Length: 209
Length: 232
Image: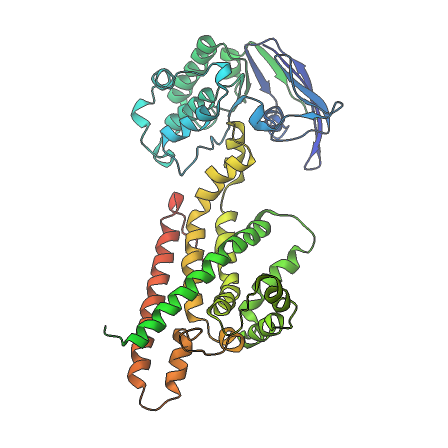
């Protein structure tokens, strides 16, 4: 499944523009800080609306300015892992994980809850609140929540930025296992060359327009 | 504490008036708070000012405006009487309306603060997880704003219990119908030899108000993430 993205927009007085097409696997989105990498993910997820361009994933048009198509985020089946995670503070870890699972389209085949929890090694955390989790634990819960929402693709916004050495390695392994196990295409925003070298099948460099 | 049947009647009436006031005021207060916290519309400053007006206006003026509007020939009183056969004048429902309007600024403020404290990024996350706008509101926005909504109920209730000026101007002091705690205390003060009644009713007022403040503070503190937003 492929991404076919063309985006052109103004945001906070700056122009953000990129065009790329991928053929599955992990695509790394790179570029200097403030160039709009997170905005590109937000556009693909449907949280931001560009002025021009299109977002096509696996042949499905999610956004097309020329044709006036713009699916709301909840219809895009996009597994988004935010840089700031955004776990729901008033819900337990389990309720966070179930939030997307309950709303997933059953026709698309939903991952098994118990299997995903085992896979991410978060079973002991289920009854805790997000505020009590460590950085690595919260990161794995955020990935689990996205996976269980029945996504067609994953968007990972700097999933390793907030973590130190050993945890980075652990989460990279998780991402590799997700790729191998669930065959979901991913776009990964990253600053780190090591991360990109290890994970990415292809690299898209975002430059300031 | 031993109250006479009449005094119990005053307490019960006060609770009924205040209860009706906040139940009716809550949806309006929530809608106003939501519009002020999230909305972008022309005249927002004016709406904000109007909502806060009862806080700074002499209560007598609010009561007088209500009296004119809901008089049998008034702009609101006439259609109410004609189409619904309802009159608010000298009725406990009028007292509840006056209390609701006087409590409105406090309620809107409390709800608005809690809505503004809800991180919109969490709502975005809910949308990417498949929740529509309404679902997101019900499962994320509302639960996170809940302490402020509950505090608004308690504070509005306490404010309604104390409402005097607008009530006595609008619906007068009718024993058993509109004579709530403050009105009854004031009436008792006018009559020699009723000091004991004044004492007892005043103590009930203090106890009820104190309870409301403690409960509202507790509700706000116990909110998600333990954020210590104060509504007062």
